Length: 211
View 1 (cartoon, rainbow, N blue to C red):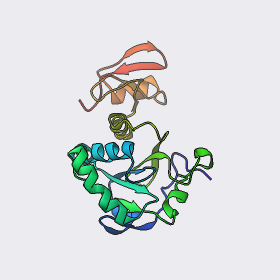
View 2 (cartoon, rainbow, N blue to C red):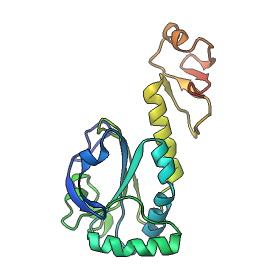
View 3 (cartoon, rainbow, N blue to C red):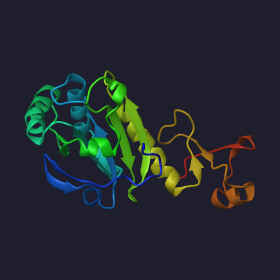
View 4 (cartoon, rainbow, N blue to C red):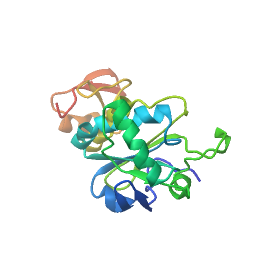
């Protein structure tokens, strides 16, 4: 059965390029981005892992740690990491899981029968501090992921966890947001005494509360 938003992220133990981990223990009280890549020594994945390495500080600012999995071995991951640093100018500074037995890939439904082979698809799982899956993305193997979009959604999730708001289309951190439709006007006035711009009764725009 496929994992859904709000499900608890399945735990596992695995060998990685940074030693053996228990996934939930490794996450600790922070957030995680678990992403799969089809195979080592492949071009799109090489650019993606270089990109993730360069975003470590931006992920850390959001209390998010990155971890990557494919069905290749840890030994292959370590050899490939040298290529990533050489070609992308960025060292791999996060663990890569060796999943030769496909345990993690099958737990997270990362191998699709119609994909044409037994490698993982390009999946992303954002997992919060309660070990709940908050976002999933699946890309085709030919298209590299947009990590600015992944960071944008993390910003939205963390904002809306703390304030009774939702974020509109193409929202970026600092843009106006929407008063949660679950709030009555009376409830909203207590939380947002400065008021809002009511475009429709169900569409009430306000400045981002934490800015």
